Image 1 (cartoon, rainbow, N blue to C red):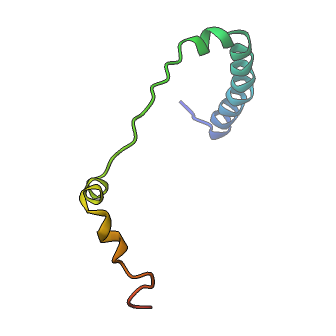
Image 2: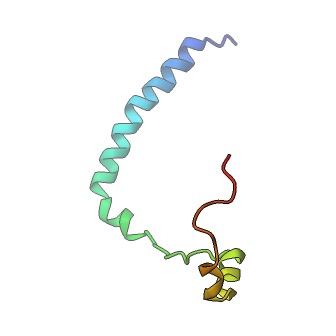
Length: 73
């Protein structure tokens, strides 16, 4: 059995050139049915531990922070 790489490249190229237009045509005619199966789930925002810790701090804490950084690099 003799395997020729040119045959493999040609077969993949032809499959690509025929497959993409075929998929687009199939989607065009079945668009409503395909999209009717979609289910969208709303994700809740992720809360991090440091955000919860900030909420526990009193508002006065933030008033005492300096406006300028203490060190410049």
